[in-house]
Length: 184
Image (tube, rainbow, N blue to C red; front, side):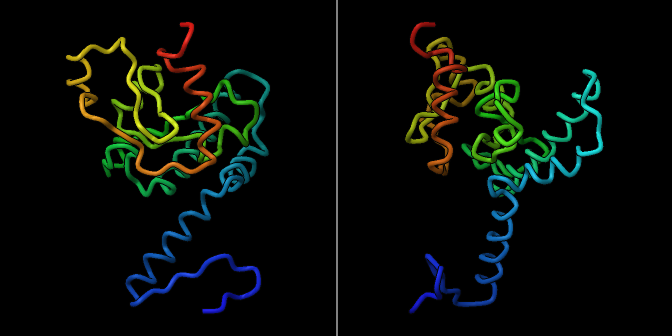
């Protein structure tokens, strides 16, 4: 097969159902391109004042809803670790915390997020777990065997799919949020 000029890959679909799935996934991913959530956020908040604490909280809430929607699309409505597919239970978890991001682009970057089941989100957010470069979940020694078993952390866990763009955010989490980091 000869690719058209500018194309980097091709995919063959044997039937309409497969083609439909491929096109649906391609559309989902276009909604999560690095600046797509930022553009939506800028449009929705352009006329909102940002001077008082209450006004800033409203803007932050709008951003968090956009971020959650982008993560639901990127992770296909499933927990990045367990595969749980109940969107109402899933949490849009920032890898580098919202308050520590340098810009709205960083806050809304889908690669700065993991869609997690509630117990994983809480443990990740509080630094009891982090994600190694290979996607393995690393559990802090502060959680003893009973706590690990109760949380489902006794068996090895891993993030299903990581992209190279996740690396810098995960490195930040390991160095600044994870309790088990050196020197703490």
